[in-house]
Image 1: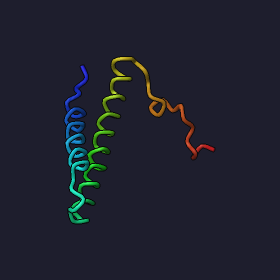
Image 2 (image 1 turned 120 degrees about the vertical axis):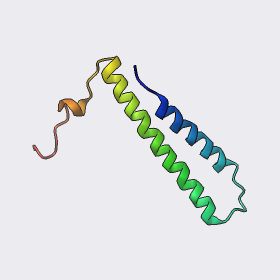
Image 3 (image 1 turned 45 degrees about the horizontal axis):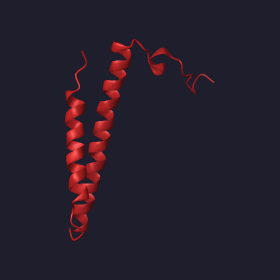
Length: 80
C-alpha cells in the first residue's frame, strides 16, 4: 500500500502558504513579500517532488508499469 502522508502534508503546507501570499498586505516591506513568495515556490517544489515519488511508486507497484529511465529506454547522449 502506498503512503500518501508526505504528499498530503506538503500539499497542505503549500495551500497554507499560498493563502498567506494571496492575503498579504501590499504595504508589507519588500523583503517580507519576497520571503513569502520564495516560500511558496519552495513549498511547490517540495509538493511536486512528493507527488512525483508517489506517482512513480504507484506506477511501478500498483500498475506494474516500468519507468523509461529505469529500463534504459532513453538513449543517453554519451552513447552517440
